[in-house]
Image (cartoon, rainbow, N blue to C red; front, top):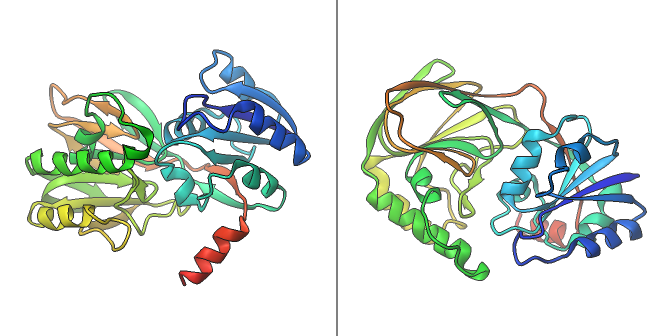
Amino acid sequence: MRALLVHNPTAGDGEPSAEALLAALERAGFSPAYCSSKADELDEALSASADIILIAGGDGTVARLARRLPDRSVPISILPIGTANNIARCLGIESRDAEALVAGLAEASMKRLDIGRAVGPWGITRFIEGVGFGALAKAIDADGPKPPLPERIEKGREGFARALIETKPERYVVAADGEEIDAECVFVEVLNIGMTGPRVMIGPSARPGDQLLDVVYLTADRMNEMLDWLKAPDHRPPPVEVRKAREVTMTWESGRLRIDDEVFAEPATPCAITIGLEPEGLRVRVPDIPELSQKRAAAG
């Protein structure tokens, strides 16, 4: 099989290297080609004929590549070597053992990954994780150098907690498939996958291929519950409200807006936003790693 490896050499701690990944692909029987995710020739490489495209990087790399793939019939797989790896985790790719993941590709299951579409004053932008207003957008927009890799998730969650405290609740009026949500909120997130930001599962009912969006919002009266939840977010569901929809519309009047990891400043005048999903999603190969299957079975 012809495999294109698209690798971000600066993701995570820089390991595994492109050379190690190419060697693993050859051992698994693939005929691999290589392109850095930062290369000028990336679009040309993505347009070349391949049986599978492997994306080695974090969420930013995966989302950028997923949004610009010219042929969505070509399956992809993810080698998660970033920090949060939200997209991979939501698809069931949790191992960072790249060689084991590559070895399991031949018999991997196929899953769908929806592609979101946000239309606003910026034009049309595709997304994988979600579109958000309020505290999480503020946290993602925070300036400053990245902390050391082992501390990034913890520091990211601390930054999210600070943004929750500092964000003044606003009234949001959102139409989810025409049904109105009208509430004072600290944030509103329209999610394609449930995990976002510093690896927080704020939308546990979201599924990456169900062709539905999850409108997740934190009302002002539950902010203290959210802060308590954020201290240990992996053990119980968050204190948020959820509404599922195929199309979400609203008027953006103030505050920051984020689309995946890109943050837009407050608009000069109120503007209409429409958020939906594209009909054609991506086909993602998800290898079955035995030790992960055993852990999932033991967890029930």
